[in-house]
Image 1 (cartoon, rainbow, N blue to C red):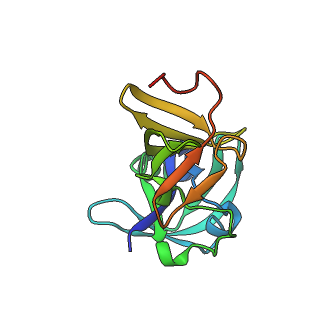
Image 2: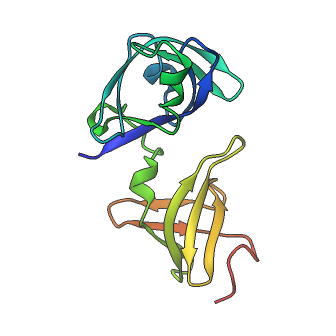
Length: 169
């Protein structure tokens, strides 16, 4: 099973080893807490234990065991943290993991090919599906009105895009 990204270090903060982390998880409180153990994406990867965490305007302010000064914290800039995919929570019937959507074929409600999901972009107001078309990438709001049907088994997403969202075929 592939590891699942749960956040990354944006930058060091202060002189005592704190870092600002952008959480990328369905459950920030359940992943980013004192005592949580995460794995870095380094080569070789390393384990990190959170000793303290709190809110910050740019994400979370996190202290890791063994990271006690700014120099060590600066070295973590850009480091991503993962968990095993088996450690993710159970999804409700209308929920999907972003990595499961990537590569799905996108068609309109008449069955005409629109493109393929390239990525899932996270936003504060709503998430978007980045759909690669023959003319480039189109970001589609990931809302029920536009994305009414997802069939993961068939790797197919049906969309009812408003006029002008996709280039004319």
